[in-house]
Image 1: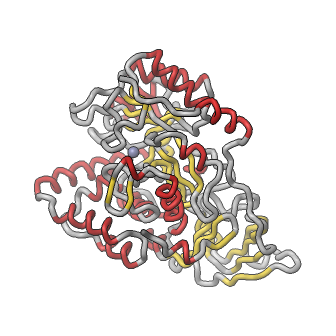
Image 2: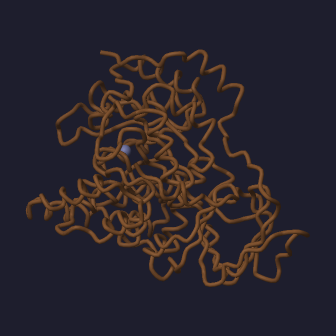
Image 3: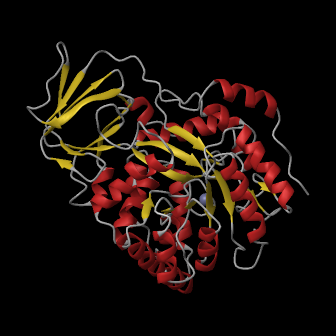
Length: 451
Ligand SMILES: [Zn+2]
């Protein structure tokens, strides 16, 4: 059976054709400000130990060594001595709209839920997120054009594609298009192109033999049709064999690493021919499954107001209920994942922050999960500096957010002021003093809000 089509598609297409999905317009600010003295982690791998940068009208206008950047007349000054500044983080793999408190329901998919999530992301310095194919109706397509003042920017695949009743786990299962024939697949992609989605999402996974896997014939048709419309296709995968065939079929990015086997030379060779192809790492849920004791960061999240007591209790209970056998199996999978991430990293493959937050297995700590994921990326073999690039410049490039991803002249002034240096300990990205979005400090009233 075909799932229901979007209402008002024609009207939406007209609206979208008139308004480009940029939504990064600078907001009025109180004149230029010089921020000086911080250690600046630029986002491209460089570090400026004693930096200065000017923010004017929502943008960085000058960035460099302290004493080489001159403040415009009348600029106010902010002393950041002893602090470290990093660019805002960008998460390329999220699922918005389903979680509210400890509930995980399709009925939660409302404007209020998503706005609340975008605000939570921004509170923790996550300035842009991509919703990976589980949206319902046209809500996210509309929100993309008008992000909340203090919220993260939204990018979206709209509805992804999978065989009928075989995509993401419930309650997201019915959100994607259910495709059985090549004609259906091409028609759905054309509809997505009319909606100007940011990318196309497919699921290629039989969930351990429990559901039908998207066939090569269908994903080749989807990739072909998407490329005709200048859209890229990103896949949920699990196996090495599928990763190789998808690469040969022209896929543009992977939203998970290979998890069934160790990455081999053949895969690395295929990746070398396609240097723009990336892997989102999504290590949060696999690592969560290995814990046999409540991780300290859960209580840290609660204390910092980054998580609701219900959500912390739910995650804590899941750890407590885990059998030793389940934890041992999860550790084996985690170790294989970590080896694969290290191999991809050593081969120079593009790696990006992607957490799966809001989905079935990663829980709903929006804006917090990203910081824990950074720690896992380092545990899997990235240096802290590489992990920060993978969370800033690389995902900005993937999502074509040209104004984000670095502290550089001309970019949107989205940055995090930290009390400690994450190059010494990546967990220091959680020691947030302040967050600035489009040149404005995210107010405490927003940073403290959790329902
Ligand atoms: Zn996902």
